[in-house]
Length: 153
Image 1 (cartoon, rainbow, N blue to C red):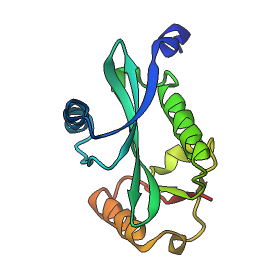
Image 2: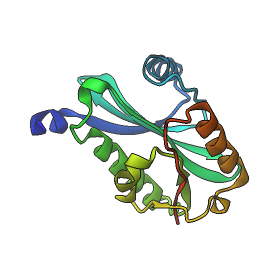
Image 3: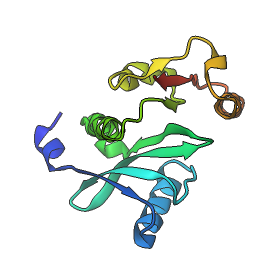
């Protein structure tokens, strides 16, 4: 890893009320993930020289907090940027005493999300119904991918 690049990355947290930021993030999502988002998400963003190169969202859905859409531009992956975003996410949750949070990652990311206290659910019944249904939909849409549920108790 090039430590100098990692040190030049700025990490920030913001809501999506700024129309220019909303537009930039919308473009990033369409270009890199084909996912949607809304203005009620908290956005943790990584920037290099002002350019958005990575992000993760904290969503509040059905009275539950969800970590969603960790995405780092391909050319910036494997440089610990995702780890820095995850640490910022963790600090934000701790500062607000948010203990219960969920995510639905690919199974190869278990150790990554475990860094901040997420654990794999033993049975999917541990997930709120809307997340269980979302997990089932992910699996139907991409049967070759192995998704699972995680919770940070």
